Length: 110
Length: 113
Image (cartoon, rainbow over all chains, first blue to last red; front, side, top):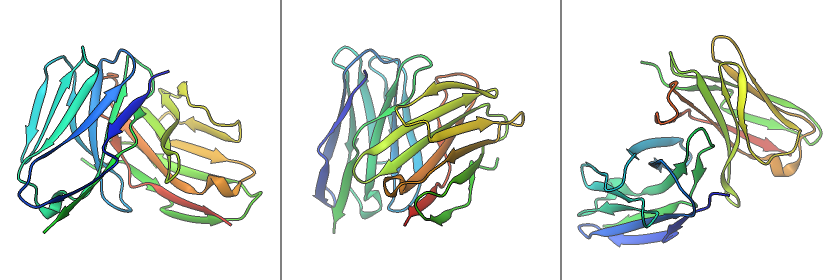
């Protein structure tokens, strides 16, 4: 069974700093997604990564995928308060269900 | 393009009752998936429907069921509600290719008293 682990679970960081969230998964996957969730809200799609070495960037967020290591990272550059949210990675293979990680609750401190 | 819509947004029920939640996918999307989100268990997959057929099913008891109509709208039903069914129920839709991104609706917050 596919398992997805994220770390850290909680992250408190100062504005202007850089940090990385890690997502490890246990078996073969052909796609990985990153989602953002604000408190009490639904999930917003950030990135989809489909191949080894894929890198995508949007504003201060950059996601990458290493399928050999079964690892994806979400890098935050020069954090701002608006990035405070919970971030989820999710993995799947073929027509199998999407399996979510535990989520990383990110708090940006002014 | 309108997003995924879910109704109702909030629901309060008592133990033993049943509930039906509705989801309208993005126009043109044929796949609808349902997830349960709780603080303790996180996001758990319930089931996926594609062209009116259940394609995948998660590890939930038979009290949880769903269906999809010919217009791709989907409903999920929970019978004999338990306190532990209190959760945010999220519906997601995507196009016909399994690599397409899933887009999530706003969710239905179910509280069981």
